[in-house]
Image 1 (cartoon, rainbow, N blue to C red):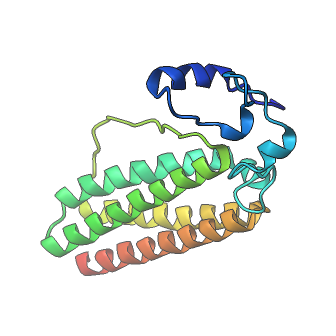
Image 2 (image 1 turned 135 degrees about the vertical axis):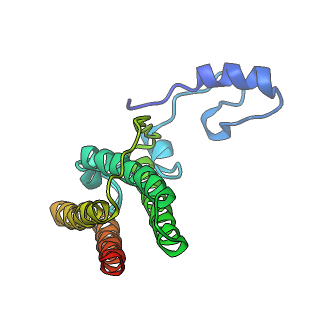
Amino acid sequence: MDQYDYRQYDRIWERVAPTLNPYPAARTQNSAAAAPMTVQEEENLPGAEQNPCCMGSQAAESLEVLKGFIEEELADRRYYLAFARQAPNASAGRTLREIAADEAGHAKRLLAVYYLITGECFRPAFSSERISIGPWCAALRGRYHEEACGGFNYIRAAEGTTDPCLSRLLTQLSEDEYRHADRMLALLERAL
């Protein structure tokens, strides 16, 4: 849309707060209806830059990848919480809960990035399937590989984008995933 039509919003505002003038620059002195904004007025609105250097159109090319990462992080969080309940000792359970919290933090950051790029909230799909952990050492082995692959996928995505801010964030998440893999290795060392 080249121009916004605020008349619909004005009708709502008139019912909600009749004395409030939410769009003073767009109104004329004698009319209650809003005049369409000019391109220059629109460009002066906060966040109206057409192609910002960070989290703009270059980052929008990675939206499907970001959606996948968000859903993976949430699934990993869920898995680690279930895994922590089956931990053989309190220390291992605490480590797994910390990693689950990290995964939730990653998902929140990625959700914020998605919003920065699109201006819309992403609603990830949630699974309600029962999680089966299996034998402790085999599960640690599987998680080690999942975390190492996650680190690799993040760095690959960072190298594949031309958006500098998105690249930096994905690199940080890659480092976190490799740290998680190291923690899985340490738990496995103690278990063997």
